[in-house]
Length: 236
Image (cartoon, rainbow, N blue to C red; front, side, top):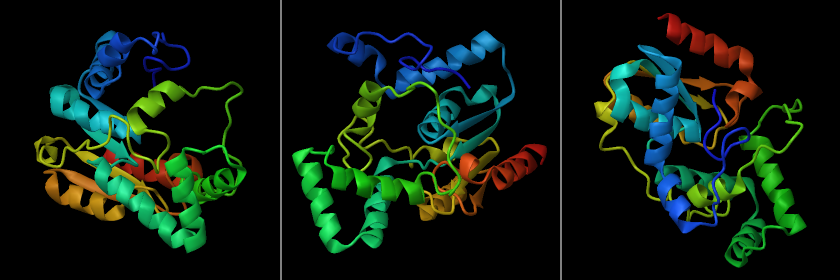
């Protein structure tokens, strides 16, 4: 694991400067940063695991620098953002009442995310689909969030697309990833299982596993199952 540009121990440019946002806040920069880390560590013929946003970078890395990889693990990520955002909306449409949905959409239109009722509904969603386990999740003692970077790529929140990742799509290039690839998704993940199954059919050497009793943070929700099957893939 490493700290990306703008993360806790790494440098953080002045994001109010448009030139810095243009230069650094794009997928290509962060993919090349992975390659910089590889070169610095002298890695060759290695396995790369990416979780969520990291899974996006891992797939992009495999497309550009795949000659260095022995295998790829994509954890809780699919090959486009359109299916992801549609799945989010489908999940909450099933989860909440029509009245609650009208309220949430109104809040998002007004960008009044601070309202307590909205925060409560958002927390309920997260408790089911981001961190599904009932046990308390590990907590950092200091804030490690980088809100400026998150909002630039993702928009105001997961339900409100509008960041630069809107429209990201590698479905037409996915078949070019020819190394052994393992796709892992939580049983209650925000990522659609149908997309995972489609991806496996598209890629020459791909398998998938559904981590039971787990949401988007599957390695925290059910670590025993997650690492058992990850280890089996690496061994195979």
